[in-house]
Length: 124
Image 1 (tube, one colour):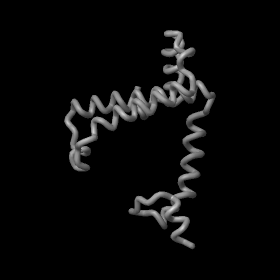
Image 2 (cartoon, one colour):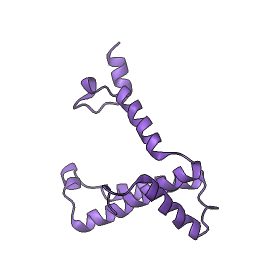
Image 3 (cartoon, helix red, strand yellow):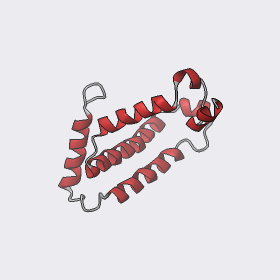
Image 4 (tube, rainbow, N blue to C red):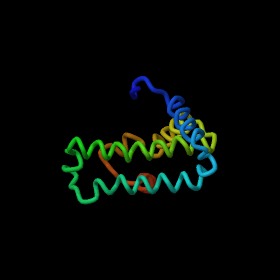
């Protein structure tokens, strides 16, 4: 399986099967899953905590593997949360991207890193 050949549906089904086989649905409430995402995100941040921007782009193979595991944990919990809430993740992501396109017009934001509210007040 690779990004090029694996669908979100397949990942969601595998995640649901893993949870079901362990009778973990009882623990995989939206509250618990959202907290787990935050916890795993903090664990991911630890890998970058004291690195410079340049160092964060030039990681050892072991560091990349460790970071990949933390990122996988975040994605797995996100898939589980979308399963628990019955969200169509593809639709949700595409809707959010459309919203971001409106919030961050490329002709105004190119090369800038301000929050979207900056661009709303900039034009007034």
